[in-house]
Image (cartoon, rainbow, N blue to C red; front, side, top):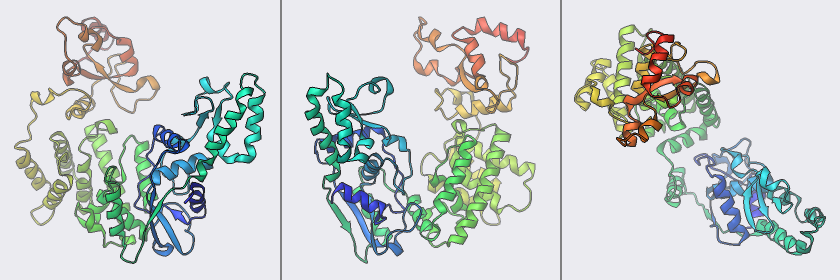
Length: 488
């Protein structure tokens, strides 16, 4: 099937994207590589589609599909989305991703190379052609490009070659791609997802959460968008979560289980109600963790899979949370994050913790005892802070101690918060002994030593710049004189 025909099928809604497919993830290098291969007539692979009745086809994007049998893309989504974006000049209706990945692709008539628009190198060079503009004008618009090239004496002798190259680029739309169909009454959603995972074995497989969400969207089409709206809201507050994470909390609220298979028999109404309860309890959890522990943004938010357990506890709890239970719950969350409770088999550990909350003898005490037995103790020792870099597990603990210990900015004397206003008040990691000084020291300190947690302190950007690469024996007295006690 010609590429142009496939794009027409996407326009007419005879071809779409199944609900379980992930969004568009290609980058500009991959888009450029695709067009270079097509221009040179190198093979780019075929498509695999699921031919099914439109009434049973849960699909991405707004609006109904075409009547009758439709084709849902199982393999080839990234390629066809890229082709559609460049040739049509806009994303397809089922698009979910970053359109900049295929916006501004240009072709150089002399070098026969593709690149994305760069004003400095392309603005005054008529040999750089906007691929989207060319595709949209088609062969009828070739005259415009010929006129533009002919007006430049240096390029006029090669106009014939350039026109041939423009025509070759235009004919990319006429390239035939093999389309293989998966069809038949026995091809259920489970079977098709299994086929998809086998075909995409070299890439990222669909998670169990993707499959669960596909089932939910079949009965509640707006589910994905509503969940994404909540994720966007939390992103605005400085936390970056994904759909799997949110779905996990919905699952614990609705079923008391971690495994997504327990969602399969739940109705759309039940899932909608669980989403409202889950988001309410997630908000409460984030407020507790940010307000009481000071972990108020994503970079220091460790142990995030402890939140579905907190959500389950809050959903089961009746009445306001007293101070004692609040602190027990936060103590468990902090300890689970410090010791990497969910860094291994996430589902299994969430299920164990959920089980500890159930029954007459279940609750926070049992949850904490289970954590203590699992780790062998909950006491923090100085040696636990020997890690290095912002990726160290105890990096958030250092931030917590900074916030909850009411540490002050050395330059201004103000309490340190991630939410300080002003571009120069943004919190930064400051190396007490500057990196530049340590790297050139005769002791030849290694990177783990230079970036040790013990050499970190949080300061505002303004203070960090004022210190520059000075040693602490120089700037400590200066700050202590300006703001007594700020260094303590």
